[in-house]
Every structure is written in structure tokens, then in C-alpha cells.
Image (cartoon, rainbow, N blue to C red):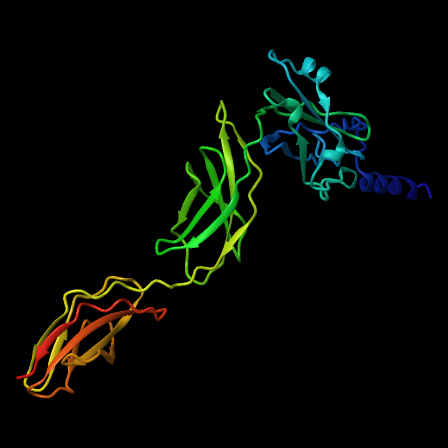
Length: 334
């Protein structure tokens, strides 16, 4: 027994290892929000930021997490004075159904929509801090200044028209700067143009593909800031190719021993599919006698000596649109 006890004690010490001093308690402080952003859209101010998920030590924030978003004004800014006089924005202004009580996974981003009317003509300053369930709070986030103006006019009457150059958009709204957004059936909206007039032509379109557009009035402000109108109603269009090629030019004809040989200048349209040859005998009506490839020539072998024939050529695109006919020419078979 005496021999067993020292061995057992040595085994116990080897298995447990050294027990050090107790670790200090966790601070459990939420980190600062660093990506607060805000802008005016119509009669609202949109505020958005990423909701903190972990404490400064990398542990889950003790629930429930509370977001203390405030808005205030002041010519000489000092954070504590601003916070004391700023208005607290209630959770009911949160527009994306975010519930911080269920954690950051259910609320990765907070988005507020706040009426702007009370600050029209002023600069409003936004800041936010996170407050953990244990009462500990982060420092104030980055501060964002929003100059509030009379709401820019929402564009109306969006009208897409298909032209040979692309989809031409027109709309009605007072303003000197407009932003156009576009989406296709397989994507989301993306800005595609800033224009100074209430019209724009989208030259990057394809026939048979649906395009949907939104337009927004933009007001440029100081310090590279801007105010936006509400987005217009959607306007969609599926461009169809209804545009014929140009009439062929430079048609020439000459008689050969047993045929009349025709040639002309090649059309330059990218979707050219070929040509149609029209012929009339004497003063008779022109009738289609052949369809030919994109090679601008034709040999008419169904002719008779001693007769005069008139010819005209039309170009055809891949959608089947036929151009106007060329100016007729006359060729006599000797």
C-alpha cells in the first residue's frame, strides 16, 4: 500500500497538469459600428449599418442587444453635447424587420426609414451605439451628416420606346440630374446612366430580351453629397426587331450571251441575311424571282433575247424585315 500511494499521486499530477491563476472576467463590451451610412430619399432619410455580432473580445454579445440610433443638429459638433440633445430614433423606424433580440444572424444589417420633414433646410447628424443586455455599451459610431432638402420630384410617365439605336426612355420630372436603373429577367437593378435631361437611350440592349427601368431625380449637395427622389414606377419592354435594312445601292446590270448579270454594293447591317431580286418585263409589275445570300450578285438565266427587263433589289435581315427596293434599272437582251 505504501508503495502504491506515491505512484498514484504521480499519475494524478501527470493527468491533470498545472492549474494556473483564474482568468479575468470578460468585459462583454459591444464594438463600435464603423459603417454607418445615411442619405435622403424623397421625404425619408435612409440609415443603414452592420449590426455588431461579437464583443470586443470575440464572444457573443449578451442579449438582448439594443441599438441606440440618434439624430441631432448643431453647428459646433461635440459628441457628448450632440448625444444629450439628439433625438433617439425608435425601433419602429427600422424598415427591414430586423430583430436584434435573436442575434446578428437574424439581423446582419439594420435599415431605418425616418421622416425628414422636421429637418428640412438643416443638416442632421446621425450616430449609433450598441447596448448589450448587461448594460454595457459601445462607443459612438462614425457620424454622418445629411443635408435635408425639399424632397426631389419623383419621375413619372416613364415611357420606353424601341428604336434602331436601342431602347429610348422618356419621363416627366423637374430637375437637372437623373439616375437610370435597369434590370433584366436574370438579374437585379443596377445604375446604368446619369443624365441631365428627362430622356436617355439604352444602346446596350438585345432583341427579344426583357428590360425593366426605374428613374430617380438627383439633387447634388455640398461635400459630394446628394439627395434622391423616390424611385419611379417600373417600366418594362421587350425590344423586337422591326427595323428593315437600308435599300441596296449601286445596282448594275449587263447582258451576257444567255443571262443578265446583276451586282450591287453590299449592305453593312450586322444582321443582314440576304437579298431578294425583283424583275419586271417591259413596263410590267416587278415580281420576286429569287432570294440570294449575302453575296451581292445574281445571274438571271431565265431571259429571252430581244426583250428588256427591269430589276430592283431588296435586302432582308435575320428577323425577316425587308428593306425598300432599290431604284429600278433596265437591261436589254440583244
